[in-house]
Image (cartoon, rainbow, N blue to C red):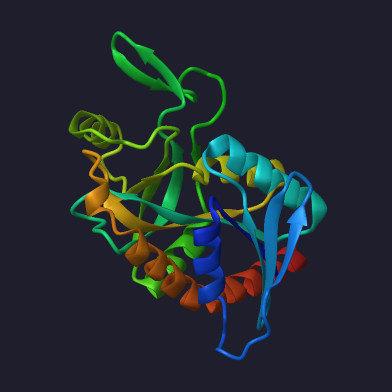
Length: 245
């Protein structure tokens, strides 16, 4: 199986590629640039090949980068990966969250009665569901929290904002800025999607001094170190099932 991994920035891509390096003397990655200027790097592991593309920050950029990559090659799975904010206490700094739902948390309308999501407005969907078995296996293998991951266009930076998100999504584990855009592009190509986030900061009042981006990037690399075989095994069984049908 060939999987597309979409990150927002180069540091996240570097961590993913570090995790996908089987051993120190492995052949180096083969970087290229897609139309639109999206850097993409190939990494081959037993049973699975990964293309890691830097799609850009935010859901629109992520959707555009993902769609570009998907138009140029065949894939069996799309993965949105990177760092993000964690909802305390379930997702502390340095931990991992695997999405059992990818939610467009601020796509909709403000009304006198509160926020109404785009699905309730009748203008599309606001949730993508990764394959349940795959998400559960990925969470188990990486020691991650299995929970909804929220996609936001503006990072939460106040206690009131965090409280509002928690009230609407009480089971949420993390927030980030790209997952829903990646999922939309994957859905347009009929492909399953997975999202994994390493927690760099707590969702709530913005305090850059408390962020631990380095720890989160290390956790992301460690997560992908064990994800390769999990995704390869799922891909093989998924292809066999499709073949029987």
